[in-house]
Image (cartoon, one colour):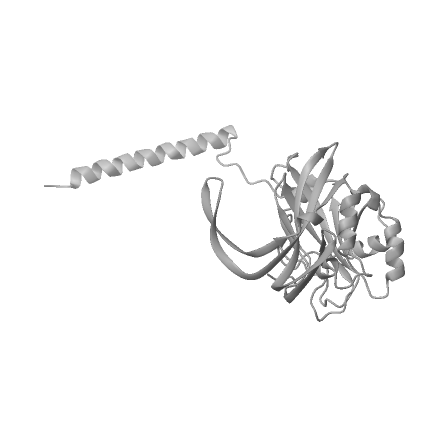
Length: 306
């Protein structure tokens, strides 16, 4: 059987297709058509669609500030500019008894805090902050938290202490306990409060022991969770409502060493206690912060490796 006729037919068809394609190119060139649209040159603007406003999202700027030693008088002046009365009286009493101090700063930030925040550095790695190269030196770090309504975020405020001693005042009496490999955190929840305000809930938590893997259910499926045991101090839950630009300030009371607040703001048992502050600022322009790609649901203090 001869294949010559088939090959001749295919070659003839190929020459016909090539001639038709050439005529199409020539006609398009004469008519001023473009076969392909060139990629536009970069103009310095992102081609992505700008981030749309979402009432279910909250952007918090988180600052960890370490002040140099010998700043007792400066701290006293600082608290004069803080509105502690904006927090519920009962919550303030319980927090104070356990060595915490908290209040709200308006849009006017005190000069000594502004100076520290202007030098704040970005985190060394996503999800972990490092205030300075040395934990013994003053400095500040800045991070962003993007929270959905009623979504839980975490603020890690201490290093992992081999023996985390807890002295908690509850129901009018002290209770002491020691936890192995303990680390202090605040669980953070936000929700809209109307008029651009946001209500924040911060609950002190102690995570301790070894990590364990277990399956947990959620949203119709099971997922593998790698976590540790935790003790939640529900009695010390702090609730504050912030307007855009306002700051929630938390710190330990220096006059109560060894208290729960002191342990929550301590890097390790070997470092000398130093004035340390935690500031949460409600972003006045959440769209830019959320679109920047830097926001997460977790933030950690320096050397607070899990």
